[in-house]
Length: 117
Length: 109
Image (cartoon, rainbow over all chains, first blue to last red; front, side, top):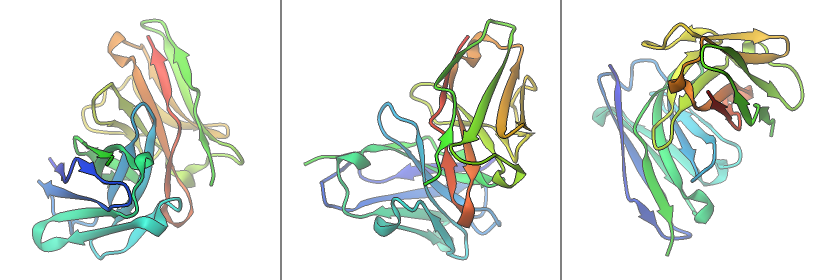
């Protein structure tokens, strides 16, 4: 059974860069699936951030595209999220996931990132 | 950007049947949107119930079913139980591999 674990700083300063990593176990990141990031602001719904294939091909949410980089490290079986120029509006629980069908299927437990000075 | 619509809230009696829907602010949902459905309880990660329109994820009870009904995707709960009280989200596939989540439905049992 695939397992995903998010890690990274829980506090980021405004205008800084939010960087998270998702470690994958129980599956190879090169297995032919897409790997996603989703976030949820406090008290709000789910927002799809973007996804990556093991080849490095990406799809991004248009509203975040200008600030977003998702990358993959096949040697470490992990993928990462970098979101630049963050504001308080980027405060959220961030989830990584492996896709089932066309959308996130298997989810990590999530990690809270607060943007504050 | 296209908006995915869900009922903000619904209620169902224990043992009853309820349909949660997932639509588009403009246009109809089709097989090409390949809907997924998720359940989330407070403080927990989402749980995938249905993907690829109607495929149940491993371990999901068969009282949950997914389909396209008319111009919307639907999640039908047959024989609702108290533990089904939670938030439900759908996701639709748009162009260029982009997924969009609906705003969620709060289900009261």
